[in-house]
Length: 102
Image 1 (cartoon, one colour):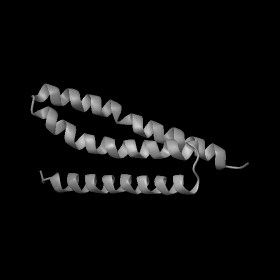
Image 2: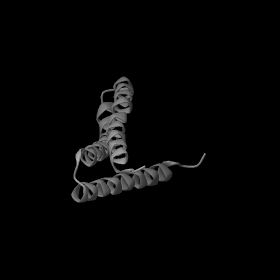
Image 3: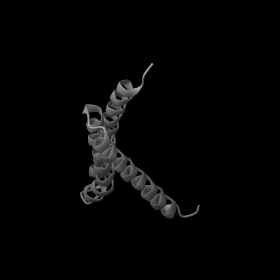
């Protein structure tokens, strides 16, 4: 089997850059059209970036205390990692409802 570490690292970098781009777009959107929906989207995108960073750092720290702690931390991170996406989706949905005209 070939070494997949470079693919994993490149995928992580691309994903993180996409999340930073989303954060920049949300900042611009709040600047241009500040309302509750855009602020919720911005909060969600900030939480997404923080979630990505914590998904990189937390398992390293948890693995020092054994594989059981690593497994528990991954389980918690997987659960908590969905919350930022839910927050962003709620904001995006509110934005769409407000700005789509029939």
